[in-house]
Image (cartoon, rainbow, N blue to C red; front, side, top):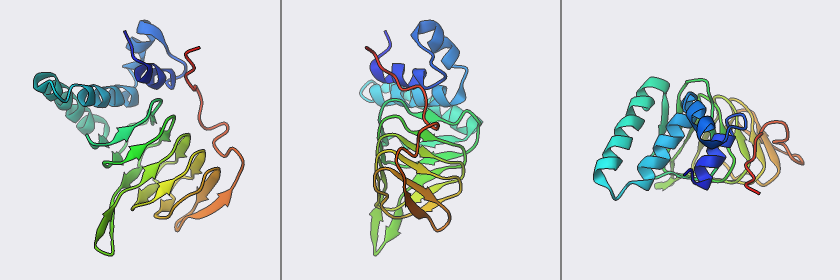
Length: 185
């Protein structure tokens, strides 16, 4: 039986559902990788299964370039770009229904001798080549444009564009960017 998080992740792959959809979803590298990440997280106390899922996850890290830290806390409905290419995510917190495209780096930075990591809200779309670093908070319903550099807090309902990044307030900036939101009802 598929749990709600797996169903939400799977549904993000073009509306797939059920066991036939799950088998089809495994053909998508992004879904396969996040599924292995979640399985490894689930089986942390079972050393044998944890080791197997971590080994498979490492294989796909090398094959597709995805790298998500084991300590990352990720909400349901994550969509990783289907285009293989480096996606690096450190031990951060990511909300529900986020899209992360290839070439994205999300991680820590040092400032005034302190290590800081981002927190990303719900319904965030991160464009190709974006870099998000430092002890910052990305709000809900935010679009980070491709190749943007973000090392500052971003409020809800915003668009971030450029390097250095510039915040533009916008109602529903992720409309037409985030599709297939899972609703079990």
